[in-house]
Length: 189
Image (tube, rainbow, N blue to C red):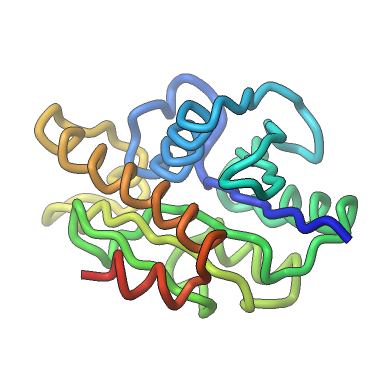
């Protein structure tokens, strides 16, 4: 049976959320789409999706369009439709607990403080899938968390985060090629 991988980036739909901290997961999936010439243009399963091939493996790139806190609905529908093992899902998302510019690959684990991940764990009833966390840093003193994650990057911060988005995209490919442990050894510096 053919293996299929889902690489889903988390974010909020709509132009007003472009270039915000909460949308770096979308940015990483867009980068993969560009690198591997995959068009993310179909609207299905409450998501924008694109099907293609990465390193010889069939891949579905996914950008849930449900708003962040309901991301799991979209991921669950895709898993059910394609009958994909949970371990073949890779989620890319922002993390306030990592400094700007850092990424972390994990083979499984909790949602931490991330509402999108919380929704996914709740909907699919498992945490047994790899994920790549993209550091966006902590809110400055006096900032509400929601305002911070929905704020746009400064030009300097954008340069830093673009590098980590590139690393996150490469880490997702490394997970497909050689597994989460190998990707962790390479990218968790």
